[in-house]
Image (cartoon, rainbow, N blue to C red; front, side, top):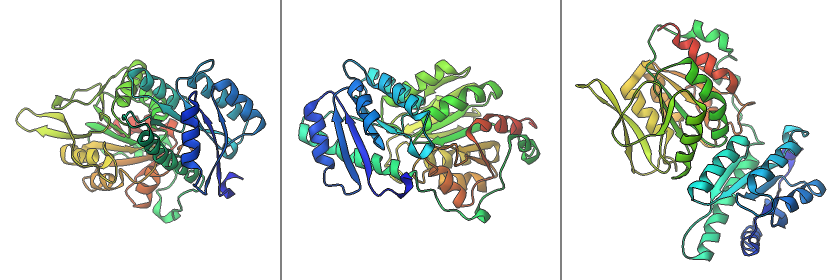
Length: 365
């Protein structure tokens, strides 16, 4: 079983020999990581995987003969025949270009575990060092997903079904939905947001941990899938129904109420990261508690870390409903599990049941 392994085996796939060698050298001294292969395109990667399956593949987005997306599709076909704990994870390595961001978002929606934008500084050695530091973190995050969070059953609400949501909901009139998500988020959002947008009409506010450029690609991709208009949040945008606002990469998004005009605006700022995150789910949730109070639904989906836990607590104290994605359907049950362990969660649902559950909670408006 992979959960008993102390060392994660890695295959590096990139068309630059210099890059592959530098990454291999940069990870060589990590005792819990073993580079078992280094190849220059997707065709060679698949040949290697068939003979020596790694735990994880780092996959360049743009390569000759067989690019990152095609290779990912082939790896996912291989994964379809394996048990969950034996599947091969994929971390995409992407450029900061809009094209690179668009392809990366597609890869994440197809099931890549996570991604790293390649540093663009003038110093090649410094770029490689920075990338290796990020890569080590992502690899260990991937390994951590096989070690479930230990939570006492007393800390968890009873298992939920979408059908019981209407019984749970009070007659409060929901005015907004706020969502926090990280690792596995683009795929989760692509699965539930179109359905959710078909069922409700209130504004939806989303924090997805991503750097600049990539949130623009995510918004564009989701906008093509949803009946809502999905956009990056802009400074002092007046919010509207049937709109979903995604916090721009690398910036916080908060909500602010104009009491005279009776409108709500998105405010974008560059204040320091919260718990290492910018954009921060906590920052969005705290502001939503002040603006909407009990008239909001807070949702925490798959993600690494604890961002959203404090904000969920603030929302709950104001009377808002807090729901989270369950562990089996999460890529990583860090953020949802943390909120559940803190006692801030009202309901836990499998990802696919969340839109119907939210709709049922709003039917008593």
